[in-house]
Image 1 (cartoon, rainbow, N blue to C red):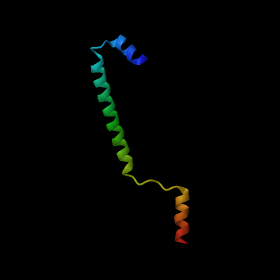
Image 2: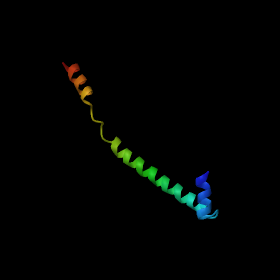
Image 3: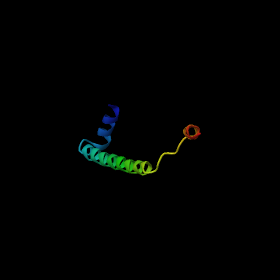
Image 4: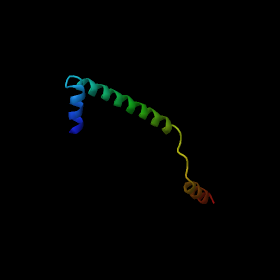
Length: 61
């Protein structure tokens, strides 16, 4: 509530919708970039942990 009142005092009621749209666009671009980075990581197979590789070696014996 305090943040909203401060924003109204600093920017005025006419600028708040513009600021909201700009913030929304920025957040959307950030999420898009994050998804692209996470998509790049998913293309590589995950590394096995030591425990998993030991279990596989034991199963081979």
